[in-house]
Image (cartoon, rainbow, N blue to C red; front, side, top):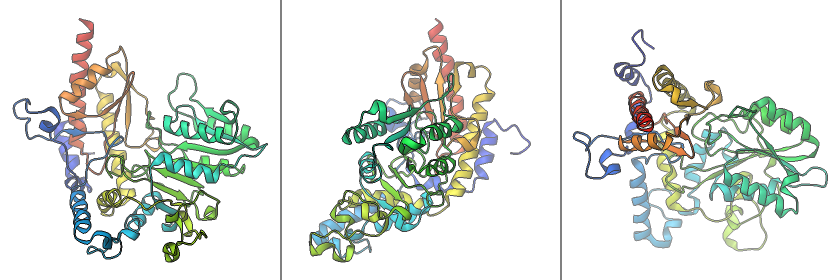
Length: 444
């Protein structure tokens, strides 16, 4: 930073001027204050942009997405079924997933053949666990985190029951130490060591949705695989957020959604990773995983596409796939290394602003790890004195878009592709105003 005070509006502007990724903000639609609040807006705010810090829940729409969707609608209207093979924009529907697989592989640190774009996150987890969770009489347990996203826990629990096992016996939950909110890697490794002989699989999040903690994926994977444990990762909050090297880390499988940091739109198409060393794994099969050259011979003899492609089931939604393409074209203009470097700076700047305000910091606690290497683009604020809802409502009225997790946490995610230092500075100022108003109202 410069020698000037780093916590002023002027300095935020200076930081934005030196940001090598600042031009990518123009690739996205930033919601307008008026559209969020309706016609009764305050003077001067009608055409102003909202401060969008909710990419951990739903990423913003890339400007190129609408044109891609329109193109596919035109092909459908003009070509009908011929769009499967005769596509004027060289995106034949029969191979639509090919247009997004290569860039996806770069983002997760994989070989092209190790990724497939398909389905939705929880469905993909079920398909992958059907392939990789093969319990025996002696090796049948699954290690999870105690605060896993509910959908993950439901999937794991139902898989355990599917095999006729008791979740109370088969599922091992790792919890934070008393008084802490995040998991200590040493505790995870200890559980792996203690239960390695009886554990068949471990499934953890790359980034914990509630706290924003970034897990030590490589270290945990190495420890588990050293005890012959299958290793899977839910990367919903990690993909497009942090640097990943799934192939080099020897991860067995992973799954993710794409509507958060990958900006593919609500309910967007998801993705999977299967390490090339496990590509022959038995799996539930569908016709889209069949060898492309002979798929339409309609023979009842399944021949898998090599790699993760052989785990596909049904033909992917063309519309959902090109929505993802709209975002991946923005990612292709930079690298995950550059995105992560800006993310560390931007989230760190937010943390500095919040911690510097002695007047309001007593009303909340940042439960996201302080170490930048242990978090993604998110800070989770745990509020005290029951003021969270009031603060959240006041932020909304000010055009600040964040999200909350009842009863007392607000999650704030400065996404480096489209958020600026000015965004973060304005958020810090509005947060202060909201806290002071809420605390004074509560005291009266």
